[in-house]
Structure formats: structure tokens, C-alpha cells
Figure 1 (cartoon, rainbow, N blue to C red):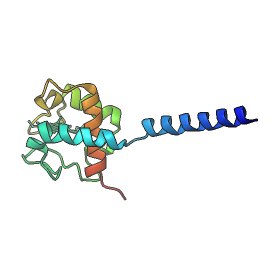
Figure 2: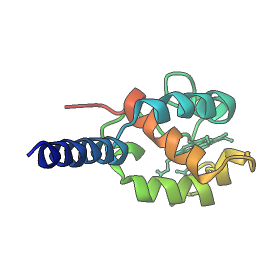
Figure 3: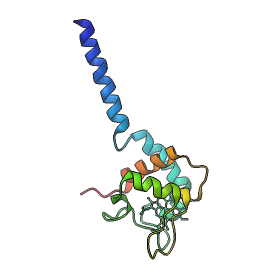
Length: 119
Ligand code: HEC
């Protein structure tokens, strides 16, 4: 009985940890993402996420880039992106080739936690 109980507790804990890790926003990712943003992205996207230069989109707009999925944002940040008729393209990795895929996942978590408008 004691064994069954402890297995149930273990499974429960494993599930809780897995769902935390798979959740949309992990606090640690957000902190690491803030460093990536401050080091590379802020020059164009600005402290307030609204864009420092013409042609840079507003992350705080409900219809802005953060309405897209993580998978699309990951692709556009890693590979660069230019929308039709745009004044300026988003450079690959924001022009910082040292950034890893994990850095980009972290910065997406930061963007969502910081700038995404919630209804
Ligand atoms: C040199 C300026 C510059 C830097 C640095 C830069 N961006 Fe951008 N970013 C842009 C511009 C310009 C666009 C809009 C491109 C367009 O719509 O044609 C953009 C668009 C985006 C988008 C929207 C993509 C979409 O699908 O709509 C995201 C997300 C983004 N940037 C994230 C980042 C992140 C994260 C960093 C730092 C790693 C970064 N950017 C660094 C200029 C920059």
C-alpha cells in the first residue's frame, strides 16, 4: 500500500514537472530571454517593444507579430523575415550569430511575458 502510494506521488510529481517545462512561459526562460533582448533586439525593437525605427513592428499590438505561433516566430527570428512592402527586413538572429535556438526560444518567452497584450 505504501509503495503504491509513493508511486502515485512520484508519477504526479513527474507530470507536474513535465507540464511546467512544456508550459508556454517558464520563468527562467523569461529571465534568460530578457538578457538576449537587452543585448541584441532592443536596438531596433526598443525597451517598450513598440519599435525604435520605422518599419519595426509593435509587439504590444494585438494584431502584431505576437499573434503568430511560437513556431512561426522561431523561424522568422532564426532565418530573418521580410513582410511584403516592408521598409526594412528583420535580420537573421537579429544580426547576432552567437545566439542559439534555445536563446531564441527564451526570447520568445520574454516577448510574450512582457509585451503580449492580453484581452
Ligand atoms: C536591425 C534591427 C533589428 C534587430 C537588431 C532585431 N530586429 Fe526583429 N525585426 C526588425 C524589423 C525591421 C522587423 C520587421 C520586418 C518586416 O516586417 O519586414 C522585425 C520583425 C521581428 C519580429 C516579427 C516577425 C513576424 O513574423 O512578424 C519578431 C518576432 C522579431 N523581429 C524579433 C526580434 C528578436 C527576438 C530580436 C533579437 C534577437 C530582433 N528581432 C532583432 C528589426 C530588427
